[in-house]
Length: 366
Image (cartoon, rainbow, N blue to C red; front, side):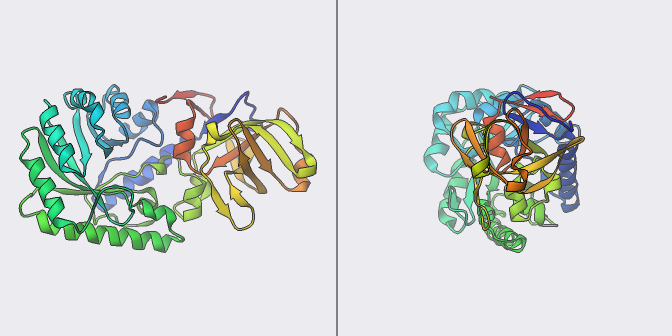
C-alpha cells in the first residue's frame, strides 16, 4: 500500500489498529469491573461486529431500529437502542423484541404508555438522564418525574425497568483531558445520587454511561455498571484534539483522487466532498477551519500528518486541500491523497463500505 491509488473516494481501514482498539477498551472494562456494551453506530458493519464477538463481547448498543435489525440478523441477541423511542416504528420494535433481548430508551409517560399498549413482547426500558449535556433526557435532579416514570414502567406487564442511561456528550467540548475527567466524575456522582433515591425500591437498576472521551482518558470506570463507547473503534482527529488518543490509534483514513491543481493558491482539488466526509470540522489556531489532515502514505498504510497539509473546504463532491508551497510540485492530477477525518462516525456513515489495507472490501449498513 506504499503507493495507494483509488478511482473514487475510499475509506481505508487499518484492521490491526481497529482490533487493537477493541482489545484495549475491552481490557479497560474488565479491569474496571464494568459491562462492555459497545456502540456500533460508528462502524455499522457486520464483519467488524464479529471482531468484537471474537473477543467475547455479546451485548451491543445501536442508534436506530434499522441498525438493531441489521445486527440482529447476524445473531446479536442483546441490543440496546440508545435513542429515544420513535413511536411510528412501534410495530418493528415489537417484532424485534420478539427476536432479541431489547432495551429501549424513554423519557416521557406518553411513550411508556404507548409501549405498554403496543408491545406484545417484553422489552427492557432505560430512563434517559441528562447529567449536563442538555440534548435530551430527564434532568438528573428531577426525582419526582423520574420516580413516576419508573413506576409506570414497572406497572406495565411487558416492560422491565433497567436503570438510568446517560451520554455525557459535553466531553466533546472539553479543552483538556482533565476537563473530560471532571465531567465524567460529575456525571457519575449525579447518577449515583439518583440511584441512591431508587435502588431500595428498584433493586436491579443499573447505571449505563459511555462516551469515547471519558472511556478513553478515565483509567477506572468502575463508578458505573456499563459503558457504551463507540467512536473508539476507529478514533479520529477530533479525539486526538481532545486528548482521547494519539494519531497512531486512528484506524481509518480517506483516500481521495486529485482532480485539479491550483499551485498559485497552494491548493489541490480532490474528489471527496461533504457527501464523503460530512461537514464536521474543527477550528485550528494556525489553519482556521479544518475538515481533515493530510497524512503520508507508507508501506502498510499511512504515517504521520504532513505539516501544513489539511482539508480546508468542502462542497458536495469537491474538497480543497491546502498545503505548503514546498509540497505543491509533488502532486499531479490522478494522484491519491490520504486524509484523517475529523469525525470518523459521520465519515463512515457517509461511505458505503471499507477497504482494508490488504485490499479486502467490508460491507456496512447503507
